[in-house]
Image 1 (cartoon, helix red, strand yellow):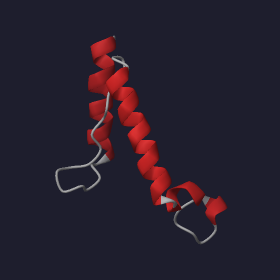
Image 2 (spheres, one colour):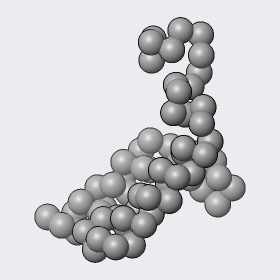
Image 3 (spheres, rainbow, N blue to C red):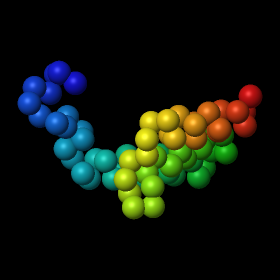
Image 4 (cartoon, rainbow, N blue to C red):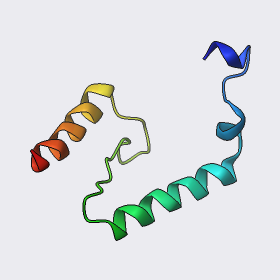
Length: 66
């Protein structure tokens, strides 16, 4: 992320409306395409889960296909 210089977020990450629209599109895709899965990456208090927990959730979904 060195291209950001001293910024913490890129152009898209700074645009909250863009992020909300992106989320809405992905959730709609998950509803409309049976092969899509939504991986929960935050806990009930909206804190980001540890990478290992997210990794395990992804693998659980992958194993349903294999």
